[in-house]
Image 1: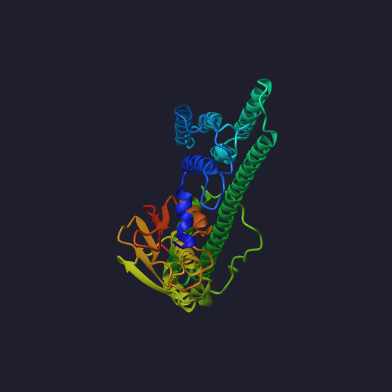
Image 2: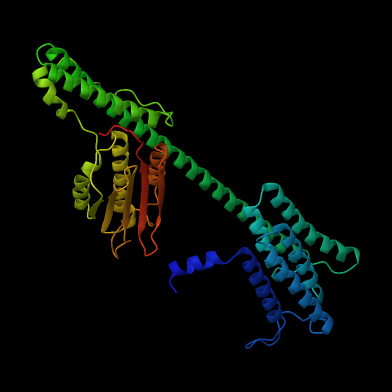
Length: 423
C-alpha cells in the first residue's frame, strides 16, 4: 500500500477505535512483559500473584470491557468515555502487582486526553486534564496511606506523557482554529475582491451606455431639423441604452454595497459631430460577453488545455450584466481547469433554450498522468467563492464539485428578468 493510499485509511480510523487499539496494545505489552520470550533467560517483569488466577483474569476482563465501552463513547461523549477509560486503567492495574498505574494501562487514556484537548472547549479540556492527573495522584495517595510501596517514578512518567499529549491536542486545536479563521478571512477577501470587480465592470458598463446616450443625443440634436428620421432612430437608441443600464443597476446595486475605486475611464465627449457620431458607437470599448467565448477558447488552447464550446438553443441577446457575468463565470471556471485540475481538455456548455435562464456548465475529465498543476483537487481555490458571489448577486444558482466519473464540474443558472432589455 502506498503512502498516499494509507493516509486516507488512517484518517478514517475514529478516536474511539484508536483508544480501543491503544488499550489492547497495552494489554498485549503487559502480558509480554510477564512472559519469557525466545532469547530471554527470564521475563522482564515478575507476574503478580493474582495475574493468572481467576480473580486477576476477571479484573482484566472487566477492565477491558470498561475500556471498550469508553472507546465506543469517545466519539459522542468524550468526558464519559474518559471516566470509563480511567476506571479501566485503575482496575486493570490491580492484578499486576505494580506500585503505580503503568504507562501501558494509560495509553487509551492518553488517546482520550488528546481527543478532548484537540476538539473540545478549553474548560472541558482543562477538567479532563485535572481528572486524569487526579486519578494518578489519588492512586498513589491510597497506596501511601495504606503503607504500601509507591511507584513515584512510574507515576511521573505517566503524568508527563499525559501532559504532553494534552498539550499536543491543544496545539492541534489552535492550529485548526487558526486555519479555519484564515480560510474564512481569505473567503471574505475573495468576496470583497469579486464585488469590487463587479463594481468596476458595472462602472464600465454604465460608462459605455452613457457614452452611447451622449453620442446619440449629440447626433439627434444636429439632425433633428433636417433628418427627423435619423433623430428618431437616435432617440430609440437612447431609450434602449437607458432602460438597459437602469435594469442592470437595479439588479446589481440592490445587493452590492461596496464602493468602487476612483480613477476609472471617463465617459466619451458628447459633442461629436453627427456624421462621425453614429459610426463611432461601435468603436467604444465593448465589455466581454458570451460572444467572446471562442476567443477565450483559443487563448486557453495556447496554455495547453483544449476547450470545446457547445451552444444549446438559439442565440439571443442578453442584458449586459447577465452577459458579462456569464462570461466571467465561464472564464474563471476555465482558468481553474488550467491552474488546478491537471486536465488537458474541458467542455463549456451554454444552454439558452429556456428564455428565462442562462445555463452554464464547465467540466473536465480529471488530471492527465504526468501533467503538472498548481493545486491538487480541481477548482479548490477561492475563485469558486467569487463565482458563487457573482451568481448570488444575480439571484442565480451555483454548484461546483467532483463529477461521478472523475474530474470536476461547475454549473451556474443565471435568471433573465422578464422584460429585461437585451444587449
